[in-house]
Amino acid sequence: MRYLLLICGTEESGRRMAAEVDGCGGWGEEMERRGVVRGGAGLRPPPEAKTVRVRDGEVLLADGPFAETKEQVGGYTVIECGDLDEAVEIAALHPAARYGMVEVRPIWE
Image 1: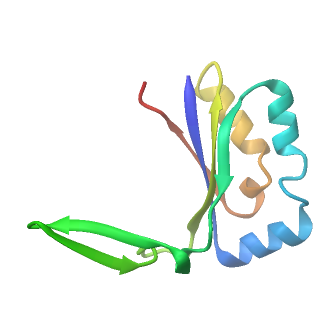
Image 2 (image 1 turned 60 degrees about the vertical axis):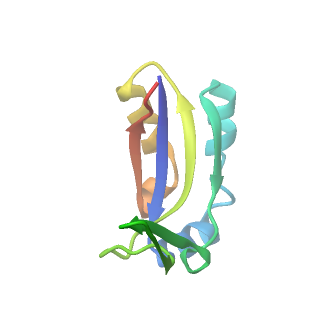
């Protein structure tokens, strides 16, 4: 089954991780070796994003994401593994889990 790992944190935790961990500290290489990575990427900062909504046929465009939280999605990885327990184990090994959070979400198939 495939799972989406949403890599989230604050701007500060992102800077901290970048300063302390080279890339993902070998996590990506280890997951490639295990054969579970199916794709992924880091995301540009929220100020470069746009949020699109359509209400009553009108396109409403806003700068960046809007959320009542300081945490933001900074990247994602798609993995394929046997079950949710394995996906959680893989997410717990990601360096971002120590500074921010990694949301594990099954992908509709």
